[in-house]
Image (cartoon, rainbow, N blue to C red; front, side):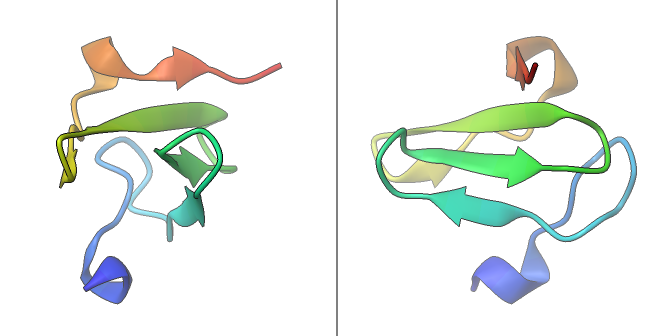
Length: 50
């Protein structure tokens, strides 16, 4: 299922970070949270990466 999900901003592939329960877009420098097993792919909800 992860292969079907892409970053809503860049349409790049997302990487799953199991420790933080996030989907990471290296292209956009954003990490999207996973809440209750559901990815929240909203740019406003994403965490900015350093």
